[in-house]
Length: 282
Image (cartoon, rainbow, N blue to C red; front, side, top):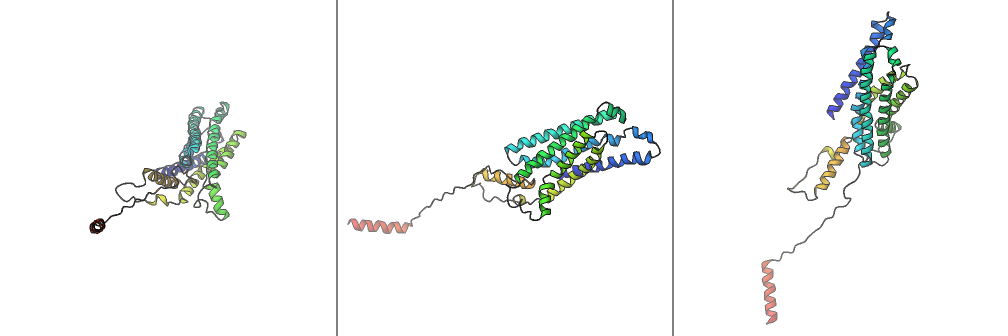
């Protein structure tokens, strides 16, 4: 998880550098050269690939959260993962194809923009699927996850921590790319979406309440309750680590405890009983 956060922050840095270089190239370096607007600078070309890779890296956390909710949600997490991987493939294809055309005129003539548009659509679908799965399970979660009292807490819980905000903004970005592909409005919205991924991920990580995963000691040479209770404890600890709203209770709900009593009779008492029995027979 620490590696994932480091990768997200590194990719966020790259996604900040690329737009900065693009703006500097067109607005500063070539301020007096309008013909430069016909060319595609490399920092602008690689933006679809950087965006799709950042989305995949960030959404791995949410996909894992959804997969821990139950068997049915594992299918949804797998579907979202397939969409994200396809989005990365389309982003890579868009980058390679755009490097080949090198100008805006050829870019629109060859309909290359559909590759980046497809990447945006698949990423937004994955975002919405994962966030909807988490939102559905919030009312069924425990009290620790439902302790939001103020409106601000509710907004953070349902909009930010579930990834719904990134899904909505990403959806707006995909719609603008479909409706207005030549206006590049979707590119500016995409820059905003990239900032939201790191904010959302760090918000979820900082809002976790680790109780089960804080530590557990098992005393004795053997496990008297069987291996099932250890597996359930590990599952609960992993669910808290990934901030899962609800964990399926796959183990038994009751524990059968059998008590066996042994009665020890003193040897002296046995001798007294034997004497009484002998005298009675006499």
